[in-house]
Length: 384
Ligand code: PMP
Image (cartoon, rainbow, N blue to C red; front, top):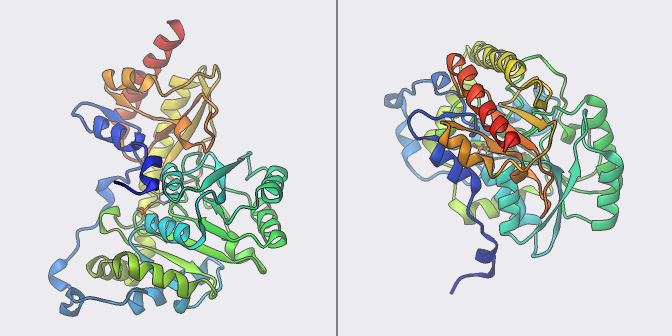
């Protein structure tokens, strides 16, 4: 009855975990939720009447202008005509997959990578091929080998405060990756929803801005800097890709919701935008620091990690590796939730012994208690 691709759809571990993690009393380090305290209160009464009507597939012209201007400030030379407003950056993954992928097409991804990108690309029956991440960026020799041996259709990278690893590529790594992509003319999808959640002021030029000739798509989102419920993100693409992406967008949902775009434009135009972002960064920096302190107290003998300079996640590597997936049930019984790291690898047999912990959502006064509960789960598993 169903299309072939439906057989590749597995139940989303994220959805199951998030549902269980929402039970009262559970301290959840599982999701990627921004802290709700930071969401502004929209003044819907000021919504211009024309915004209620259908709009353009490309997005609101003034918002596209504002997005292009902000991207130029990051060093990405682009015009408003290269901006497509999308329904969250998640839609960009879908549109780019539709643009490049046939069944069995290889896609180069980071190892580990964003779980919902793997789900999206697999829905197009793609073969995701992982390149391991080192301390400053992807393993370049392996990346080169994958490009030569697999001929991927495109590469999917999250260079700033990556989900799930928290890694931010060094400037040298960004330059080297750009040179490699140029050499092979491999298209890049650069996904940067966490770029603005920078707590230590890290230099991070977009890789797309460093490319000389490879086709590129740069993605950003209002989910983390404004609010995820409005579902507004954007992609900025090399001019040669734009007409295709606009048609794919049109066929998918005509256009992104206009009230959400209006809110995003209000945000972009607000006189206190920089101050609001700085306040948000301060808020998350405090949570990151509280989390890092509690983690050092509770997990120093069990795991290794790098304290991230931005984003929402800490990535733990167990000193004594074991599959963390079966521990989730025990954790939930212990009123704490985490994300098993195995789910973030493209491999059929993923490496074991990793977990992703979100530090943005749990109030500081509950972090220590949550980590204590989690530690107990691991202690019991090792003792068994
Ligand atoms: N890309 C990455 C790497 C993400 O972590 C997320 C979700 N947090 C998304 C894309 C989707 O975000 P959104 O659709 O809310 O912009």
